[in-house]
Image (cartoon, rainbow, N blue to C red; front, side, top):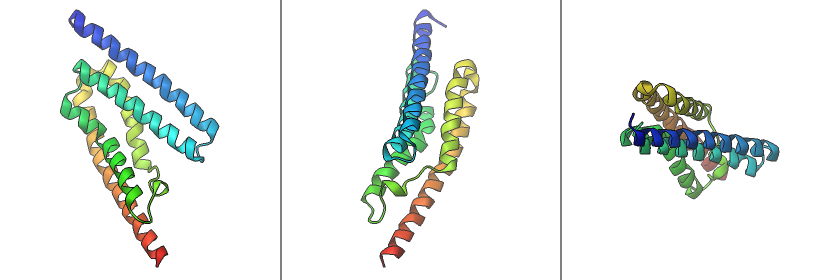
Length: 159
């Protein structure tokens, strides 16, 4: 590793661990605010996304992941952000219809594990991101089906 690459690698490590600490602090804040409250329910996933985005962006800058791998890694997060915005404009749906799903939580946990694993097992980056890509695709379908069902229930309730 060249001196410049080593400097960026250390920057990547520092940002990753700093973001992890920030995510942990936000999680504690959300727990104090009560996850069932609107504020608590929004802070925790937002902190997760900020951490994931910061860490994977640092890896992209460092060249640890390629641009396609970057977008594969973030595909579920991008899709859920779009879904959240779309749900707000569909009659009968709103932020409350867009709830966390177990498969989505699984993807988040795997993302966090992979972000740390990549620091120690760089050769495994490709296969690990492929796993995230597959699970993200399934999670996107899961969220889509859940929103379609919520929309159907909202239509039936309004009749």
